[in-house]
Image 1 (tube, rainbow, N blue to C red):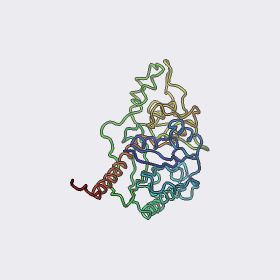
Image 2 (image 1 turned 120 degrees about the vertical axis):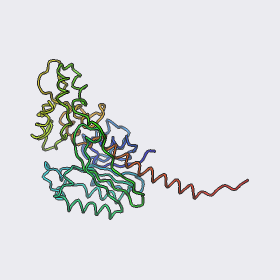
Image 3 (image 1 turned 45 degrees about the vertical axis):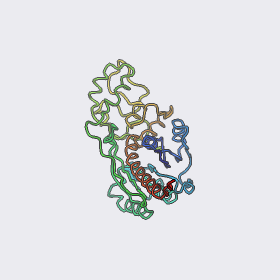
Image 4 (image 1 turned 30 degrees about the vertical axis):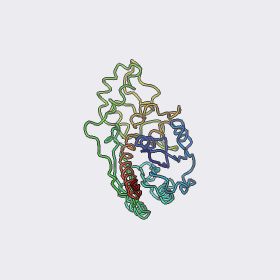
Length: 330
């Protein structure tokens, strides 16, 4: 069964793609940035992409018509790079998400943010957000999930809040981490690194035998096409990757040294399928990829939410069947 969803701050579609795989039909995706909107429309022409400021988007016409309201609200208010201003940051869109929960009254709400949101510095603000969610008639579940636990070859910790409406039986649980060996950068990118016949690709694969540091996207004002701050670049160097820039192509046959990742390679580490088109501008593509929620993680959380909805609709059907009068005997 396919369930309806609205997503705000949709970005380049990482969360939307994962939720689509989990069985959700997006009736609206709201995103303010033109590049991101074009990315969404290019990859999913049938999606209803609304390219506007979330402050102008009203959820009133969707009231009681939506199974899931989801959104990866901007992380700068809670990240170290964003100075951790929290509620004092003009980019804080938690109030808009709370407004939409009240307007739409979805059966379930899912909010994604950076690990910093769960830090002690935001204890009071976080408590107020959760208090507000409860006051709206929902039961929130909060957990830090690492992308590497769900098939993504990077750590990428993310704070997830899933809230279930109180009139619905709350059977939600977060997905269990995968058991066994985690995918490595070398195994994940081997075929892409070998595409141009690089002779040293097998040696590189052996060196890149760990998960990646968290992919970063940067912002319009800061962050270009590279792989993050100094510490991250050192971690990439240990994996045999030059993190000081982004490459245009895979290494040639006689390449020597540490290769740079291409946007396609970064997208694969983020969990995107190889056919997901981020456009031809490298800096814009890297921003879109780095700021995305890994699709495999969104899918796994989405499947857990789907269990709640499956149970809810099954209970409604059982009740409706009990109220149907039996046909008289002939």
